[in-house]
Image (cartoon, rainbow, N blue to C red; front, side):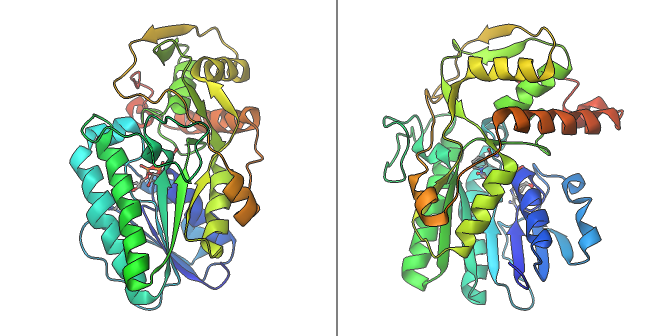
Length: 329
Ligand code: NAD
């Protein structure tokens, strides 16, 4: 990425801000974040001006995008990402996934830039095939409570593919599985920050159903490495990026308790509608095409996640900013 001029849509979010930082560290000529701060935060970008090659623009990408000068890469990281965020912002999620993605593609087409779409394992829905390979088409309820996110991301993949076929845009599609790490919000509804917040407050862990549903959790630096490798590759097929180590939600709760200590127990609650039973990426394609696989262990990743949440929550008094005041789920 040395010497490249790069636009990151949704650059103020969890993944987007880590990506901006990584691109600047890699010697990008300029990184421009475009974000409306709906689920992201200026705080996530606070360290980036030190590079002197970073710009943050406040803009809703459902409106047309105009950037002066050349652009080499457009990364589309703009979308509410957690089930809770997207259920609270259903229309916004559908609009950014459709209009926002198209505006990003038009920018890439006009600048002859590579366009990378941050898609998601949610496009597989409640999968009937396990583990999930990229060839699997998914099992999605098009009108259920999760559909605003799942269908927006599926439409996004279709649109990206259409712009590649019709306009010759150089496109890449990353299907990202559950990712965690510093700069998540405790209250965003993802299970890792939910458990971390509950452990820090000395509360019991909220587990939906009997906790036997499975997920796999990838540390943020591993996913960012995969995104950079994918952008630099010539792979136009979707590529799964995630950690193939699968565990039940009860096992995750136990891992969080072991890392933090404390005596939190498990509090069972009814399973939400359309909750996927199992999730594990098959990362054969990422290994073959990108020579990529995750290497940060869950224990290491949880330690640095706890360290970050302890730091931000101790230096700020208004507890609601970090979601410490209320139980997220
Ligand atoms: P996030 O909510 O932290 O970041 C999304 C960013 O997009 C935010 O900064 C938000 O303000 C911005 N945004 C939303 N709508 C916008 C609009 N209309 N105009 C401009 N900016 C807008 O989420 P994240 O976890 O960083 O996820 C980023 C991407 O990665 C999403 O596309 C998501 O689907 C994908 N993804 C994330 C995960 C995960 O575990 N975090 C897993 C799979 C896929």
